[in-house]
Image (tube, rainbow, N blue to C red; front, side, top):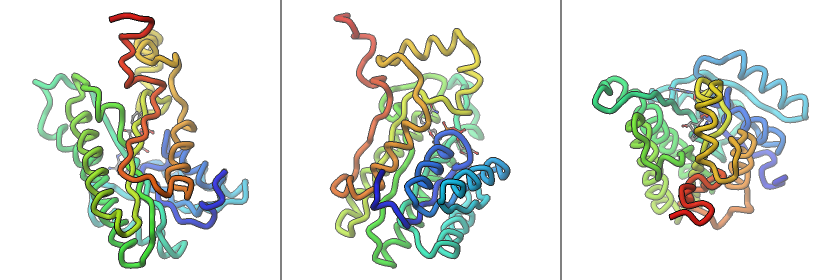
Length: 261
Ligand code: NAD
């Protein structure tokens, strides 16, 4: 547990499902004040609030589309109106779809880039502006992916968006370090969430993914939430510009395992 998180106000985009849900519940258990941004999943968001409240925590939900500037402003205003501040911004909302690159439409390219990269930029910009104006030494956490490093055929828009998240994170970390605002990202490997449902429901496809993971299992959303609370806490007070890989070793060249190569 991280006592420094008690009473801190955290916004989590895409917070009603998967990794976002696990982070909301973990920040709630840490006694942070949690704002869950959801896209379509109002019922799921309300369930998470109930779970957090059962353990003595406090949370609120707000609908919003991270690709819309006005919605990001609305989400952050909701946090400030409801809980009086914004200390931690978690830009988590993201999407992917598989298309061979020669068939990838401009509409699909734009949709993934505007959700995964532009949406995270807007979240960073609005949070940083508030933190600067209110002298808050806040923490920003962006959700990247192992595909900020590992090329991913048929997902060129996704890989490009996450590569962008990496350098955006590092650039903002450098720019705002003098103000004590820390900007980091988490790069998960394969995690058991709705984004992977179709793939992991198929035993053959799932086996193919597990073979890429030296630790031999698909990660749990709670294992990513554990990274987020550490990064947001005072235990990580000297950490900025970091990509925290949580991938069971996926980025450590698994093809070379057991002396191969
Ligand atoms: P998920 O599908 O459960 O979560 C994504 C969330 O983003 C959903 O709640 C969805 O409603 C929301 N969202 C989508 N478009 C939105 C928009 N325009 N505005 C607001 N919210 C929107 O999947 P997840 O695995 O929990 O994904 C969370 C993040 O983790 C994503 O950024 C994803 O790229 C990243 N990630 C996931 C994995 C994995 O294996 N699950 C691996 C690496 C990175």
